[in-house]
Length: 203
Image (tube, rainbow, N blue to C red):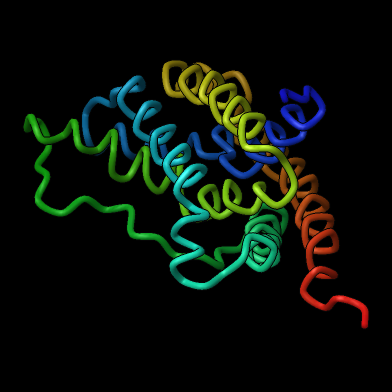
């Protein structure tokens, strides 16, 4: 039932998409605005979002009349553009990272650990799309383990953001982001090629 190869591949794909190390500047921005972030809260909420879409995503697709293979092709295209963002340093997707109505120093600042930290910084549209797309390639239990394993680097980075930024420096963060962008680009092409043929069966 459990396949270490599948778990390893799914882990790397999700790690590249979540890009928690590349997201350090965003995390610092959220912490500066909120005054404090809650790593455990952000990690659990983002994990809950991913697991929800892992198990209920197909039901949602079925209601909409979309099969997993079609969604995987669409997901591959999304991953392709996310990878281009990482490699080229351009912004193709715009997400609202603001949380209206929150004032600095208020108790409501705990919400910042959920919006925008858990969603969309950690479990954003790209991550959710990837989780659903992986269903066309891997077994669900293996994807679940990959999601849980990815929460380890997420919580570590959230706890040690300032130290990691100091250690790697701005240039180091950029290099890591571009390296994972290239890997993600290759993954997107493979995911597209592996599923697009199912949409056009040979007669």
